[in-house]
Image (tube, rainbow, N blue to C red; front, side, top):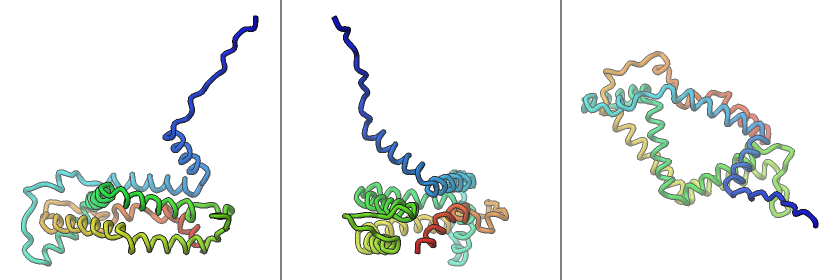
Length: 217
């Protein structure tokens, strides 16, 4: 009598785990993309260490009507220097909310960004793009992506949505900056020099991407 044998059976990987593995392998296989994401993460973390307490932003006792347009402009400038990270976070939140409330626009932006990242910016130069049996050069790929970006931003509802969200966010920032009295705020040398969220992303963060783009053109 032959003894029965049990065959090992493994569960098929789920679609989510497969997608995560594909994304992780894509990042691991591309040193430029991996370095860019690492630098971007570090820069973002350093920038957010300069975020001001939110209770200072919404302190009702500090609000007053500006005496003139010049006073309002001065307040906006001082408040922006002090609350720069908070303002940029608020602006990003407004844009993100607008995109989330319009899934098609969000999907379009994600696909466009992914096309730039994986088809041009961080694609190895020795791996040409082949679509429908035709090989596209770097210049042709750049032209296609530029035309596609112009079409998406200026000729679809995505561009108007982004512009509207940016204007709403900027309006909120300007109104808050004009009515928030900055007399109780202490601006150090770094604040007056204009260091903040965007300046924290040093040239080292995007130097690899810029150098790669210039080498391809």
